[in-house]
Length: 414
Ligand code: FE2
Image 1: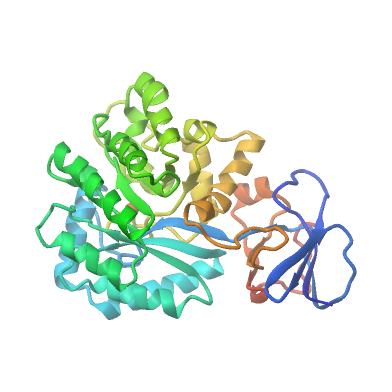
Image 2: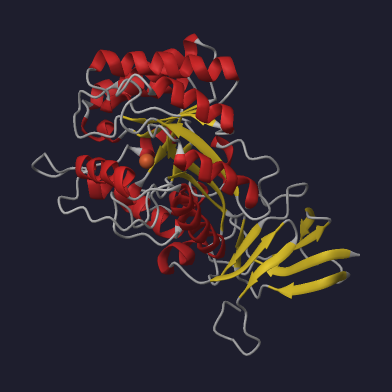
């Protein structure tokens, strides 16, 4: 007797067909997936051909600034950082961060997100963001897996206190070492910050995720140093480069013949943020370029690539709705990823790929994985990307937590 049986689910391996499977769940785990499972379950749900996926994973976000709704009239990264600095000086409290982030996470869960990697600014002498988000990570562990990154927003060498603050944040329970080499005052300081921060991670046995080369400057090549230090310290497979937007305008020979092979050798992963990259990038060049890392080339080279949100209604971005399909949709456009297999890859870039980057245990829609999943009002992944449909059902550890089905509703896929 299963606890929950989901009948007639379309999975990610099926497109333009009526090929469906049944998913059996017991004790919070997926116990079987195949056609025509016996109808022996305490609860039976008929998916009626709707797409069922493992939950969305947002691997790059900023929970401390979410929903602050601070305006940014120039639409630049620089004004965003300046306005956030002012917000920290005038408005930020532990309660403010906690309440905004909690409300956002509850909304994100209803949108199908069950894991978030959030950077938290550790340049604040009181570490208010870290205090709030470490507490929230524990309070919401039954709902969302939150992983926190110690992020020196104003530069690791921006002030002498930051080194201590970053270590204190890690001691408090922040999980991952962050950085922002392109924002340090000199190229040399950027390189030194990478060297120091990867070493801290190696000594503490932690993962690394740096904002790296989020810049319209083709000479911003810190990812090269990140790859080098990763190999030097034996951190292969444990280091992520976020953004790397400068790759979009670097010399193609250098990117293809030197940089990407270096990244592959270091087993770096890459997280791009299509919505924010296309919005904040490309201000200083004519003709305007696609200010996102070349995800097709990076994926083609064998790197693990994810797409994430970065921001929702904060000093950097006035839009966003916790919709990872919107992220994948934008990524497919900017990244020239419109083939059938490539569209499937785009869905993987907001599900299994970021789960791998975050080392999420038991993630996946496979026998033996945690029964965390999501049902969408779409007949397959192409329709899901095309229509950004309603979230019909969200299951967490085998328990139906969101269910928007209506008995009389016949509009869903047959
Ligand atoms: Fe970010």
